Image 1 (cartoon, rainbow over the protein chains, first blue to last red):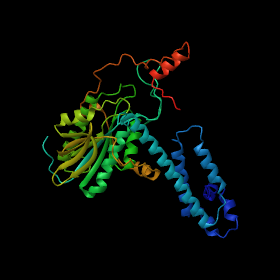
Image 2: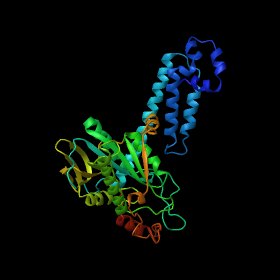
Image 3: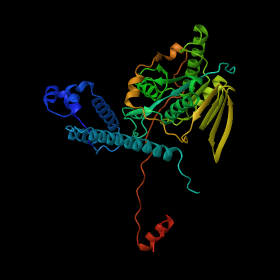
Image 4: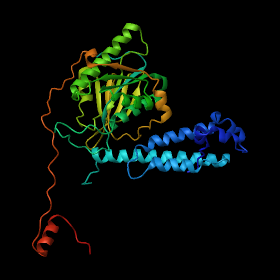
Length: 118
Length: 280
């Protein structure tokens, strides 16, 4: 998952980011106003909340998601950032589909099982 | 109950906080009930009901004046109300029960809901029609709760109100001007099309094609601003103590193991009896 996490880094060390020379310097100089930062943070929060309900307890959804975010913290190319955000949205939709399908299948099996004689 | 006259719909959606569908149920050590120290969530049938109310508003737009969710339960049931508000309801009513109180029975719940409906009607006539009151035209609820599977509250409420009822509904359309609801209900061997005059009580079945929407984080944040009214059964003048007393709850007996056979012929005979077919 290629998602820029410089926004997260900003929370912990604003000063170092500001002094880093970068073609996207204007975005880094005013990290709090960046819409990309807001999108990244919103995506992270949403995925974290979804990950809490993951059915398989042996699969560390939130840990993996966190590491994927951290791997992409130094992305600077806007196209790459967009692609990463799109991938994050895709993962979110896939996880939602998994949850709702699982729930639907469980309820259907319990309350509306297929006829055995047809 | 007199047919409602106004040209707008007020929808009431009762919901219930149940043990989550994915939890493995266990009997508690005292053998008086199940272990309730587990994950709880909204009853899936009630999620479908909330979803249907919201979709009805998307179809009818301004003709739906309000969608109110109501729940009867302990303090934690407010979280379930917040989820429903995040899905698109306008306001919530939380009728709080103490933690140690036994779970209410369907007749008690139906009486509480009737009291809520009458209270809202009274509030509307007293203060003119504001957002707090109004006649309830439609009650949409799940057909049964997944923890007790009783499936009685909807029918009892309709009887107490004298309203029309359509249970196990899989499709709902409301003609607001004519004050009727066209409902398709699931019955054994097929479906039934009903036309109910409003006010009506509709209980939703599983066979809705659309899945309930996911309450995303921004919606949950927005839902925190929506009002939740807190009441108690005594405020409404209803006694919700159960009429039945649960004496004992036990798990079903464990499955008995297999049996031993003496020789191959006996094994083949037993296999044939149990329906195992040889593959060539």
